[in-house]
Image (cartoon, rainbow, N blue to C red; front, side, top):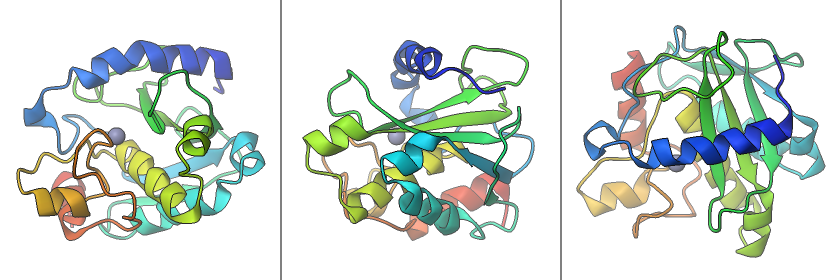
Length: 199
Ligand SMILES: [Zn+2]
């Protein structure tokens, strides 16, 4: 089921309060998961219109194959089990992307620390990428890799070591050690993915 973009954006704003309230103790991987690590991504036309196809393709390929259980294919048709990638705009300043999780039986987003999910909706906010001079290949890959990382079960990096935080693509953009130049998963990120899904 494809949702209308306005509904998605309203839902994203509604869930943002839930996401920011997730306790630090659960921060590295989501508490729940999707039933299978074989993901399929459907790209909305906004992805190519705004020029993010290369970077979403990059993100899918970089996350695939780290765990033998996790791959992200591309599909031309969205179903109730395919992830959906969008490029849009937000009124939230300095928010560059967002990922929401859904059960196919329920319209409202679900908290991945409370429920398993069937698919996710990933969005990159082009207006803030432009506004803060981040619309370049490296920074676009960085955001795509981060959001797709959320979609396959990774939460924000919960690591006290600031060097590891600066290397991880899953560090929160609000963290002082967030590194816009990271375009591949770090060893830490790879280990987190394997801890969730298996080798
Ligand atoms: Zn994030």
